[in-house]
Image (tube, rainbow, N blue to C red; front, side, top):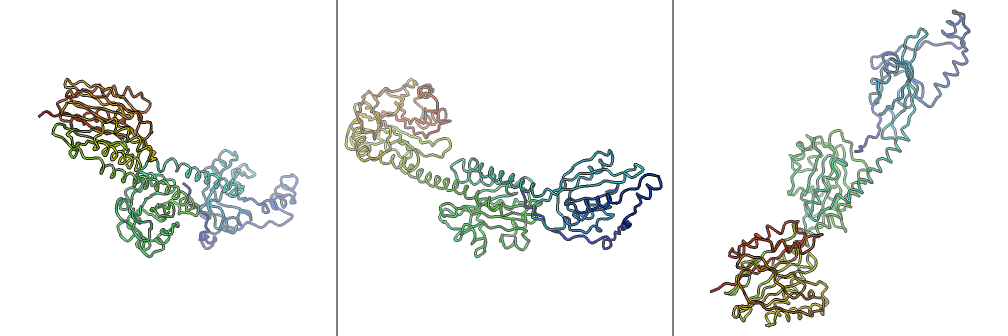
Length: 597
């Protein structure tokens, strides 16, 4: 994770005299003579041309690279003017001192220099860090080459170092790499945040996504659902994540479910209410007290060495849904302008996913309440003295979608009983509203005394003429205890199952017409004698599975071993326990049994 490591100039050390170290000045060499030329004359060899020495001195001292000579203990014997300029220290400050003493913020692999002196093989190394002068680069880098130095007797005298600064091209590469990582981070956010449809899960995914890539700890605070402004109400912590090393120290911050808002009248609250980023680095103890009114969380931040905080509002369609809180601690760098930009974009993308989850959850709640209002509890079903009924409704396994499945029992004035099971296409509020429409229509037609096939014909035409776009399957069973008969009619629905008095499960053959709402209503009905046992009506979620032929699901249903004399509640619970697992759709079940007086 990138951190703000911009080079800043620290206070330079004092010179050798001030620090207590005194470097012996180099002996002056008069032009036209040298110890080398004197030695050459004594040995009878041609004298060294001092013009070459002056030329070499000019090259070294005028070169735009750093040049240094160090003794065998890695103490400086010479540095050229360019090295003095780029480090911010005069050449005299180096003499007789080690790098750690004069440049403590530079990381140099000293073992490489020792290896060069040991075997004489030149080596390269990358040196990084900060010097005593300001720099526009986040990290300064030099590519250095080291050569062993020997005296005239062949004894190792030290090492010569030549360093070329490569900070600018390296900074460019770092920026490209960082930009690539940030783009990859934002791209992956689309597939890792908002994978589900619940608000809590989306908040948890967001908090866990930014740790540790963008922060050491993160929280997601949500505004109450009845407000769209962080100015008028506190927020509530919905999710929290931290890197393992901080989990214990920041336990006091994990107050999920509690109201945690930011103090009123502060710049923090005003920025968040306006949808702006708020960032604070190098936070002091006094500032922690003002930022977090309750002292224990503030003390936890101080104990865990949390020094920087960034707050990014979660804004969608102009509404502030909440806050993404990022914190860095310990040796992690402060939040930079680039971090703020990334956090702003990430918060914007996450807010869209969160808004979808909020809307879905609100719609899910409305649909569920509407469905509960329309579906009578099993004990509230209308009953006649001669019929016992009970029912079950079960959402899909993940509970995220409320469908249009419904059941109904009508005790008609003439003593007959109408059993209804149906399934509206689709899910959500629209499906629940459509279910209400179909249920009311069928009730009205049944109370008018129509036969099952006539009920379906009129309902199909009424729905088609009204322009209602959601079709539905439906099955009707009209029981007449006076003549001990059952009359069936189906609008595209699966056939019911008889649990016979002998315990067999048999599909009831019924003529099937088109679904309601198609406008193609031609329905037939079938009359059979009532022969005891239990009649089971169900929707397709009980037997239908993705990628599987429906006949296999029906075979599982008819293959169940059930006792026809068991209570109806037990029979339905057994059916659900054995068949409902893995269903991707909701399920409605209705069971009926004739009761003899």
